[in-house]
Length: 438
Image (cartoon, rainbow, N blue to C red):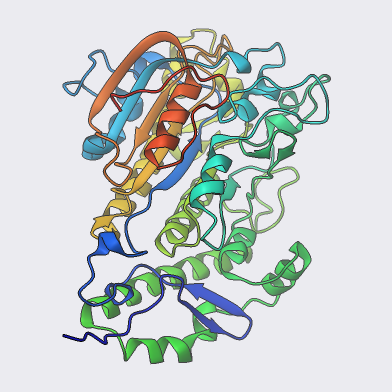
C-alpha cells in the first residue's frame, strides 16, 4: 500500500510583502498513517516563567494541607478550575538572593540561583529560561521571548555596588549577558510577526504599519483550498485572534495618554490592566504559532510604582508592599496579588482551550509562577511563593501541594522542571537535588 498524502511543514508560514505569519498546529502537518508521537509534531514542552515582585502574603498563598486534598488560599484561588494542572511547592529558599541590596539583585537571582559578583558589570549565572531556550527553543523562530509590563521601577532597583542591570531582568543568556525585557506591546508584536535584522528595521516596519493578514491574504486563501474542515476552522480562529490584537494595538497607539501621569512612559503604552492582558494574549499567540517555546514575563517591575485603581487600589505597588503589618495594607496587598493570579488564570484558561497535537497548550506547558521574595515588609527570601501550572506533556502530575524541607534551594525546583522538559542537565545554580514527587 502506498500513501502519497502531502503534509505541511510544522514551520510553514504565510508570507507576503515583507512579513510572515506563523501557523498553529494543524492536522495537515501530520503525515498520513503516521502516529503523532512518531513525527516532529509530537508534543514538546512549553516553558514559561511569570515573575511577581515584592513577594506574597504567605498566609494567603500557602495551603494548610499537603498532598492533593488541599484548599486553595485567596491568592491562588483563581486557579481553582485548573487545580489538576497546579503544583504548589512550599519550603523553598534562595540564599543567593540574600543581600542588603535587596531589590537590586532580587529579579536577576530568581532563575539564575547564583549570587552576583559585587560589580556594576553584571555577573550572575545563566537563568533557567535560557537553559531551556538553548535546548528546546533552537528550532523555533524565537528561542525565547522576554517581556514586561513596565520599563523600570523605582530607584531602589539600582544599587551602588551592583548597579541597575540585575534589578530589571530575570533572564541571563550567560553569567554576564542580561536580556532586556520588552514592555512595549507594539514592539513585541513586531518582534513576533514582523521582519528586520535590527531594531531600527523593526521600528521602520512598525511605523509603516499594515495588517499582517492583508499582506498574506493571497497565500492564506490558497492554503485554505488544501485544508480539511477542522483545519480551516482552526486557521480562521487563529487568524481572527491575530486581527483582534492588531486592532487593539492600533487603537492603543492612537490613544490620548495625556490624562495619565506616567513619567518616561512613551505614547502608546496602555493602562496597566489592558497592558498585561494584551501581553499575555500575544504570548498565547506566540505559543500557539510555534514562534517560541520559552517565555519570561515580569508581571510588574521590581520596586513598581504602578497603582491599581481598576480594582479600587490607588496605592502604588512597592510602597504598599511595605505594609508594616497594618491590616488594611495587608488586605489591599493580598487583593492586588490575587488580581495578578486572576489575570494569569485567564491566560491559563486560553491555553487549555487551544489544541496542541493530541493535547492542549496547557497540557504541554510548564509554567512557573511566583516571586523571589517572601514577606515584602521584611525583604526576606524564605519561604518563597512558588507554583507550577501545566502537565509538561505528561511529565508533571499536577493537583498537589508539595511541602519540602525548610530552606530547600529554589534551584532544585528549576532543575526538576528543566529535567521534566527533557533537558539533560544535572545541576543548576546552588541546586542539591530534584523532586521526584512533582
